[in-house]
Length: 415
Image 1: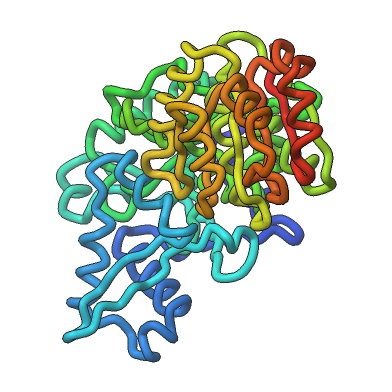
Image 2: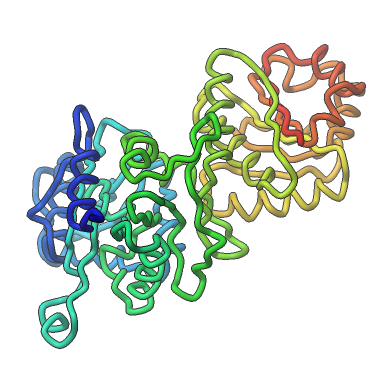
């Protein structure tokens, strides 16, 4: 006899809160009013000093709520990038402007972060529920009181695609509004097949955006309990939102990285912590530009001592194409991306004290290194990311970089 959907839901929640997990189950939060009250309490607790110990008045909290009514999931994603990792709301109190921290992405798995699980949330208001069939969401994961990851479940007699279609229907009905308009990631499962995808409007959701999970050994993780252990535990769940979501400014959509992209970025991060360099093998069409952007960006975020991240490409046409993509990804990001028009421009950007990502060709970098006796990066901590490394690693430029730079990492993308 197939496992009941309610039992799957119960077992998922038990796994999420099991052992030393930082998820806390909140069976008392069932309505939008419950969620707003809970969010207000967490916001006040995390901002006692900024509030001078005085709780938010009803009118002040209305100001907060108005800032969290997002017209699209993408708009919510723009806000969630934050200012230097801090996601803020702003409240006018008499003549004083209060800047309150909603979420601090530097506090993943600690600090001010509060992780809660709710289930069977009633998406319709009382008057709507009376006139229409009630809409109840299965399981939702909240960070500091904001719904971030929503999970829809089916039993094993049904396809996970039925959960996908259900989410699409709910979005079309406008159920993901108010405090739920902040959701960034969806998970769907029938127990044996579990997938995830980034939040989007019902008209923009496509099957192609759905991704399964694989572990570092490229083994599928499809069981819902195993998926919870691998992806939905802390810090991984928070990192999916804060570190592995990209905002494509040109397309105005959220992109959640695929598991192999995340594993590659994590491997680069681990290598950099021990002073190692290495290669990332990527096949054509696997999203190498997106992976290399996020890897380079995360290195700048992870290593405070890193002065520059330099992305090197060996062909002019790719330089323009990659810079366009990087510029679109970085439009709402906390890292500046600059391309270089010529060698002089590259020299000036290296001289700048700004911590930034520089996109340039390997030919420009090589010409600059050869022509300058005192290059600004001589004693700076830098990372070089090589595109198409199999074509660039063994040439003149590589030898010159090794001679010239004293403190650097290098990672090559190839395929």
